[in-house]
Image 1 (cartoon, helix red, strand yellow):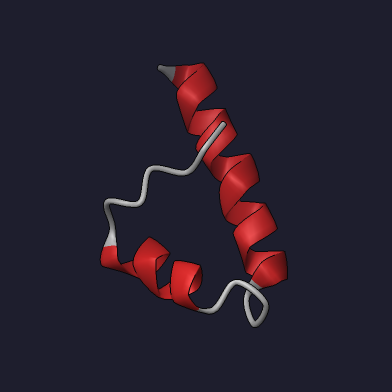
Image 2 (tube, rainbow, N blue to C red):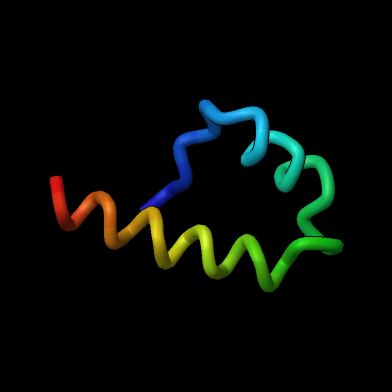
Length: 38
């Protein structure tokens, strides 16, 4: 699922996708898990 860029933390990662690519992948997995919970 697409990450909902509502948190400033996610916006910072959006500004530096290459620098935090691995972290972004983890957030995507977590985001998908949260969507499944809902």
